[in-house]
Amino acid sequence: MADDYISTLEEVAQWRDELEAESKKLVLTNGCFDLLHAGHVRYLKEARSLGDALVVAINSDQSVAELKGPNRPVYPEGDRAEILCALECVDRVVVFGEKRATHTIETIRPHIYTKGGDYTPDNLIDEEKALLDRLGIEIQILSLVPGRSTSATLAKSSPASSVPRIGILGSGTGTNSRAIIEAVQAGDFEAEIGIVISDVKDSGVLEFAKEAGVPSIFVEPGTEKAGRLSDAACKEITDKLKSARVDLIALCGFMRIVRDPILSTFEGKVINIHPSLLPQFPGRNACQQAIDAGATETGCTIHWVDSGIDTGEIIRQAKVPVLPGDTAEQLQQRINEAEIRLYPEVVGELLKKTIS
Ligand code: GAR
Image 1: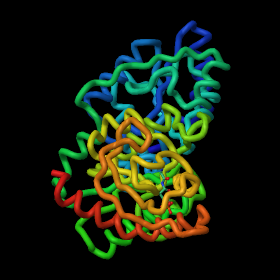
Image 2: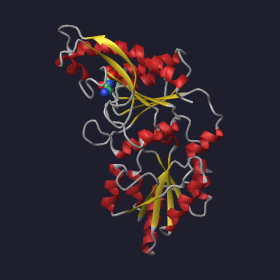
Image 3: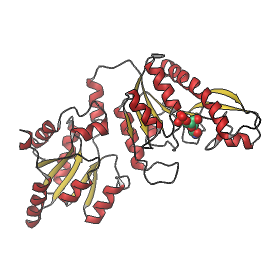
Image 4: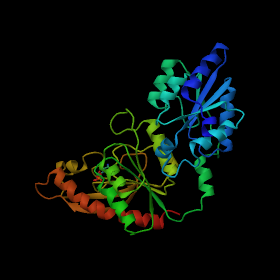
């Protein structure tokens, strides 16, 4: 039955050539489309109006789960194809299993490729942008319909849960993220881990999240210089945190600057832990900075995240002595012991007091 509504890439590629022979233009767009709403319908109508035929490439069920989390897709791919095909503006539907639509675009070679809303020609995935440019495919970014989104629809339809949800971002060993996850799982305070995100594929952060059975994903940080995230990565992180409906985001050794749209979307909800008594020794190598400065005391700080580097309002600190002859590694180890005691405690308190 589903096959009645799903075309193969080869069928569509052949159809594209037939359309071209008649001087007609094929428009391609892609997405999950797992809970169709009016915003989608208006978007698809607009996409169709740009050419003479519209092909919608939908992510396979497995790739939707990878992109949006284990509770998605709402509808399986066969149903999604059937629903989309029922729209007058949609001519064909194909399914793709990869994370990116590059193979689909390359095979179909549409005349026009459209993307929705918060994309700009600059934050399209680099790989897709390079391909579109190489094949001379016109890119059209269509504005999204305000107030219509799958996450908003799902949030309205699911009974409001009173259990607050935590998002964790980390890059390294993951002792802090582990301490928070273990505190949640031990029931030290009422919370759920919404999602764990890392910019490092083989990080301890992701490894422990998997072991603990909490949702986790790797986000490709892009090719920006060290410490920066590409626009596409910032958007992907924002989307993942939104889908996970998190109330508080704890940075646990996340070694990239967190900026908009993450900060503007989660204003007043992002906290960080830093291995010094801020405002002393911000940025990288805080322990070495403390030793070089001849400090006899340092520690760790939990603070709200603003657009500066370790500049946000301080929430709590713990002091740790610098011992004679300390190496940066020895000092880091001692600070870390203080961090993993303090961070879960502060997260629990904030969830109780601050998050409404
Ligand atoms: C922690 O010491 C944390 O304070 C530091 O990275 C370490 C991560 O350890 N963060 C920063 O330096 C941020 N500026 P972990 O991966 O074991 O949690």
